[in-house]
Length: 349
Image 1 (tube, helix red, strand yellow):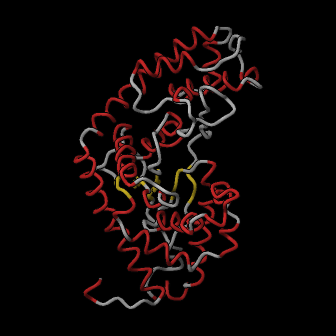
Image 2: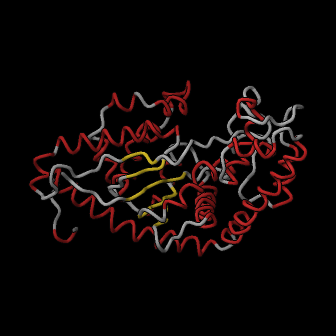
Image 3: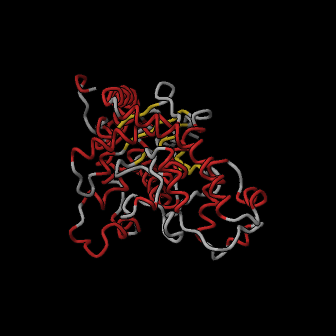
């Protein structure tokens, strides 16, 4: 039975301003994993170009995501932080996986259908093949765990399917090359408590989004204390006081959202928040939420701005991370090439 070193991989797309939903739903959850796993955190800029991008904006956004990683507490010395395009092994392994994955598997991917919409015939091949590149991102490091949200569970299942099919198709060669009964792990989803879904501050039925035309719908990670306070005070609510139990939040999406944000920022359950504020008017609850949000998010925003002002430092972090990532990914790809039967001359190994 093959044994794999426990390793976490996760990636974030550099697309648009990062907001509170990105932080609570993903980035903040990466930080505690550093204490238990070897972690590889990637800014997936190759995935970003599956839809049109402005090159200058792509560079800016790549640095912004990196700054968010660092400001949130990810340690680029103990772990690896890099941008995907600096490690060409991702693209090379993706081609092998394109030849492993089946058309039927990709046809079932709901995210492609949602992103391509009615204009499916004009969508890029890259958008269609996105899941095999994602599989390569993960399996280039033979990662055993991936923290996933609801929208990525299907892609992780495809990653597992690709790994299993590769292990089955090349079982004899894998054994012949000394890797036992499996070369790739069947990567497991890493579940860290209930999924955090942060909704718009202007409409509790819609997810917080960078594409919303109103900046008051979201708290950007680079917002200063005054802006955070103003946005929370202007957040949509309803006329009723807060309930004392979670059942009272039913059919009150804006109230449920603000209570959820408070709970996530403080690291407690919604029930704990309602025990403290049940019966209170929103004016007093919002004041408490302002204080908490400024306390938690203010330092992150300030550190992000400091880092973004020093792009040379960010680029150095990404470059050094890429060098370390490449060592692991190259070893994986060389083994894959041997297993599938490619000739590798000594000068290229």
